[in-house]
Image (cartoon, rainbow, N blue to C red; front, side, top):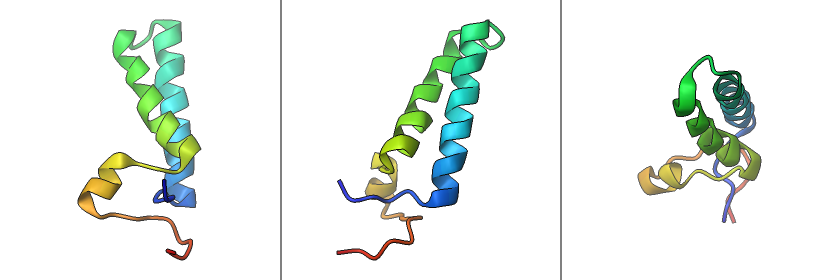
Length: 64
């Protein structure tokens, strides 16, 4: 998997994912908060399948 998620994008995904999961754990937003696992995982692994599907890349690393 080639990284296609940039630094700012990555940080935002991790923060949003953790916030959604925390909301689900605390009962504030219900079970839908577990969808936060998706942005958290894409931020941690720096790869987003949807970005590849649409040909997007926010990563500033040179492509090989």
